[in-house]
Image 1 (cartoon, one colour):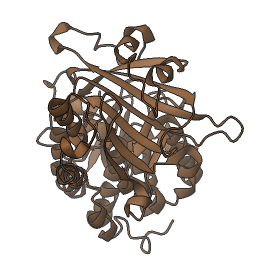
Image 2 (image 1 turned 180 degrees about the vertical axis):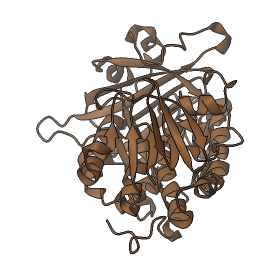
Image 3 (image 1 turned 180 degrees about the horizontal axis):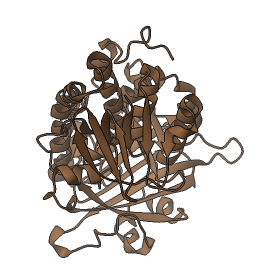
Length: 418
């Protein structure tokens, strides 16, 4: 009855924790020799935080991250467009968190190994493909090994080998021209001290938020930032370099005049010890993630542009929904199809919305109408326009306040206590 999971990222680990909770045997196969806390800052929306808390790991989030208090849009000149409370302050029953992706991954892995034993994660075991054989599924590994189980779950990311077998003609991820430079800097928090801000417009943006509380002695926090610039996709940027160490001089000049009364952007960029460059990519939504006893979750299933702060959150929710369907239907194709039927339509809408800039499309509207310079945002966009746009994206992405607060748990805590 063992479920075989390809990939020990956030999606695979969340599924492993869920399967342990519901009493279903599993094993995770991970390509690297040793898990290490790689990556940069991410945001966990309340819908995902709820699931982590319902896995009994709420205290862990306060140890690895910071509760996000507010979320705001600003013009390229630093003028406020829209700010809204987040998490508990917004009326959710659960907080929102800003965290370092690697720290979250390591905390999930450590929790899983404490509960299920260290043997639940097999390293140096990269997925190469799969086979369906009657009432079994076979996970094929790069070193030639074959592992048999009742189902195979592809949680192996945007370059998924399992997805590549399902869609052999799909090719590389799609790059639309945007490049992201990402770094962290020790600096004083800005605005509320736990604010997430997005500034600029379609072709040049900054995303910025603290991922640690300030040090009590120095007052400095770790600030995660992303500087983004869009180029002609036909120009052949180094898009094959997925995680390239970057030289700040390549992009800092574009942000030299972004000195706001609440944030010195050039100083923030200069203060980073190391900066990495990423192409902003996604894949076209597909008609199915499931083939027999094999399905996909997380970025293997629905990689999207990271403009809505929902990639990691959806990966966590995927694992929980799949676990809920397994409790309802048992381990087999019916559960996998039910999971896909519940999740795929929504994630397809998110992918399409994010290609249109998702929740931050208002930045370009303000730029078009005002050039980023105004005295009153009401003279540029009405409060109703801004509020309707913010609420619409929450509905698409699955974290509408009223709907989330009213929804019963995905996994019944009485039937499946921790």
